[in-house]
Length: 229
Image (cartoon, rainbow, N blue to C red):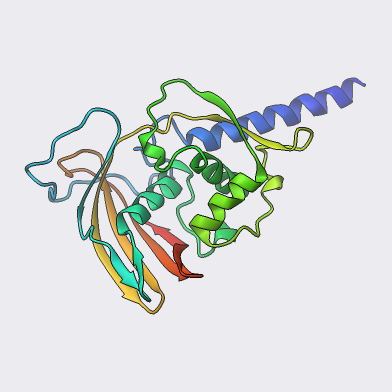
């Protein structure tokens, strides 16, 4: 009996630690949580002189921010740049060639969070909140963002099989995002969007760079792949 109880407590602690690790990915999403190989370094400032900080949390973009057309479908390159930030720096999923390459708990959390917020960085809550979501709601988000809902998200630690719902404490995502879209390359039914992220509005200290691939699928642009430097 004691052994069985220990196993239950150990498993419960592991779930809590894994969920907390994914939810926060570090206390500050503006800090690279990798091995340290992508350290911030100085680059030439590219921010516009008229830019000023706003109250609350916002994304400040510059560069090639105009939408592009892929196979007759308009692609909002700024939206994809922000998705690359969320996946790479909030969910710690920096490199993948398919949605099925994304770690299941991170993918489920991403979908869960997007049932509540359009842009995760704009969260202004300063206290963690307990929320629930259905499998249908999360899969609807994943279908919209990745073009598929054929993913067994019930394998995630966020799923409570007894209640048949997903549960999560919403982390403090709120942060400003400073970025410059360096290049948008369109070929066939895909567009590659290269974005550099910075730690401040002046864009002097580089956080990192992402290349996200948007693919037109069933008449809508979805996330196909991501690379992070």
